[in-house]
Amino acid sequence: MAADAEAGPVRAPLSRDRVLRAAIGIADDGGLAGLTMRRLAEVLGAEAMSLYYHVANKDEVLDGIADVVAREINEVVDALEVPSAGAQWKNAVRRRILAARQVLLRHPWAPAVFETRTAMSPEILVYHDRLLGLMRDGGFSYDLAHHALHALGSRALGFSPELFDPGDGSTGDVPAEFADRLPHLVGMLSEIAHDDPGSTLGWCDDQTEFEFGLDLLLDGLDRLRERSSS
Amino acid sequence: MAADAEAGPVRAPLSRDRVLRAAIGIADDGGLAGLTMRRLAEVLGAEAMSLYYHVANKDEVLDGIADVVAREINEVVDALEVPSAGAQWKNAVRRRILAARQVLLRHPWAPAVFETRTAMSPEILVYHDRLLGLMRDGGFSYDLAHHALHALGSRALGFSPELFDPGDGSTGDVPAEFADRLPHLVGMLSEIAHDDPGSTLGWCDDQTEFEFGLDLLLDGLDRLRERSSS
DNA sequence: GGTACTGGCCTTACGACGTAAGGTAGCCCG
DNA sequence: CGGGCTACCTTACGTCGTAAGGCCAGTACC
Image (cartoon, rainbow over all chains, first blue to last red; front, top):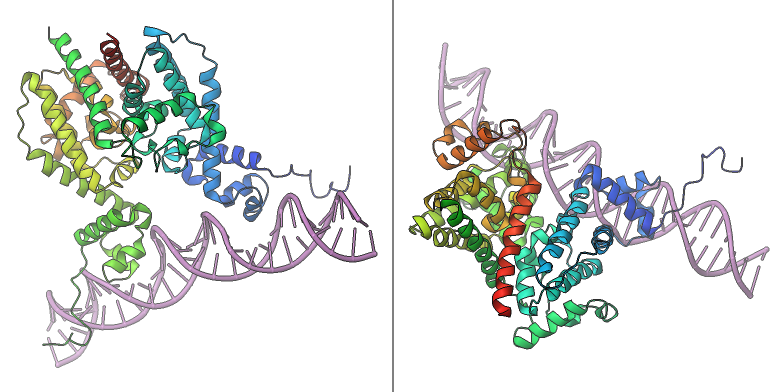
């Protein structure tokens, strides 16, 4: 019954974590447009400028909530434990992607945020590394798996794949401290860099990847067409 | 030689068309973020509020430039004249989509604008109607062609497919004056509404369409895997 | 010729946004 | 006891979209 009785209960102190959780809450039920620094502060019972003690700016808030959602996805998909050896890779990837989608449906704003992030979230790298791992279990070469990631594109994490290629190519993008946690990604990048050492910048040929994915779909549709007309 | 000598050459009067063209120019070389009403007015040698005589608000500018780009795409793809009967459908669709992509590469901001438009641009409807037509030439049922449109999704026009389904379903969405210019779209919608009369709201089951496209890709990748490992 | 109307453009102003700059109150440590 | 640090707040600036209303050159009509 204390000194703060007349000022109401003491508010929990701010923290980067509380800020990010509140931001996700706002985006979940008000959309990305409703997520403003002032509204965020209001939800937390503080003033807008107080947030800047815990996050550098709004962009860092967006980076942060993207990472939190990606972590949520990884927690869900890593709990799946689906066999992936040989021909089972397909079911494993399928289950994983559908599970990721369920999480994204709870955060419909997330793909849009992923798209605008220039620095790839570590958790998103982990997600793709695991996906690569499943394909490797199925016998994919790194090259084919690389095309596959592009082809799956928005279906893998709900956002467009064109932005997936890092600005300047090589494994240097992956922070050293993460490299040992991303074996497949590192392996794929080094192999591709080896195949095509000239193109350290923009090692993904967008046109090629686009056509690869397009032809995959068109060929599949053509098979369905032939089957249905027979 | 004349009253306006001292005031410089008379500026061409504003018009909705000039506003939209200037807006596209700004977005092309400065990105969507650079497109503000004030900047737009400046480029046109006018004041911001003057624009509002020609467009209701910024949203209408975005609607307008989306429609202009879609028209540009239609002009390009309609000039292709690729045979599409029977098995040739695939090449025809492929050529068309790749041509559309070339236009979109000149307007990288366009997919993002398409995504945010709630009202589908008439030109975008035309684009999809023609695409449907090519598949019909190839012998697709409306049902398979419908799945195919969802599966192609972002590859057809560079933006995510989930938003393609209209808010309230039936052919009522297509303005009557366009209906006769969109025979395939109208046909598809009425057939699907007939198959499933209960779901006049949200006639596209997102989960089903997502899985359809995903499986198409996974099956195609599995075939490549088998071929490469043999 | 006057006069009222109107279409096209401009000026001013408001509230929301992100955030820079600088204040203040409580705390810890010497 | 005093200085510095941490966590928060106040004030203010420049940007945005746009509401409200003024101005001015036709044009229509008597």
